Image (cartoon, rainbow, N blue to C red; front, side, top):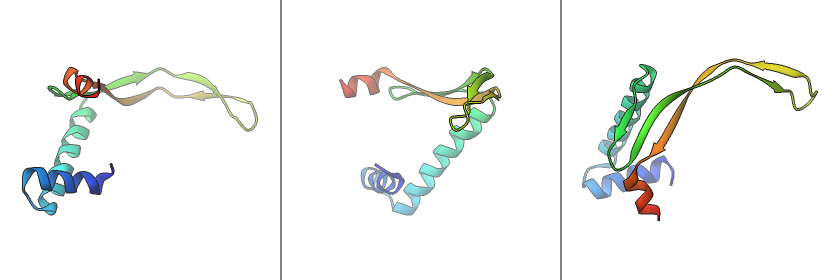
Length: 90
């Protein structure tokens, strides 16, 4: 499912226009991004939790030359599925 199909599904299920569904989806994604940028986590009970993890600096290899390169530390977004989502799939 891509973004357009998701907007169509939201519009159908919520009985709202596609434009309103698109704005709602953008608002949700924007709120999650803003919270993660602040270092907060976003928990949707029954669905899962979005959180920020820290990745330590490490040494990698350039696949073309085989030379060692340093990879900087980074913050990465992670998703941990909730029990409700796991139960839906099993």
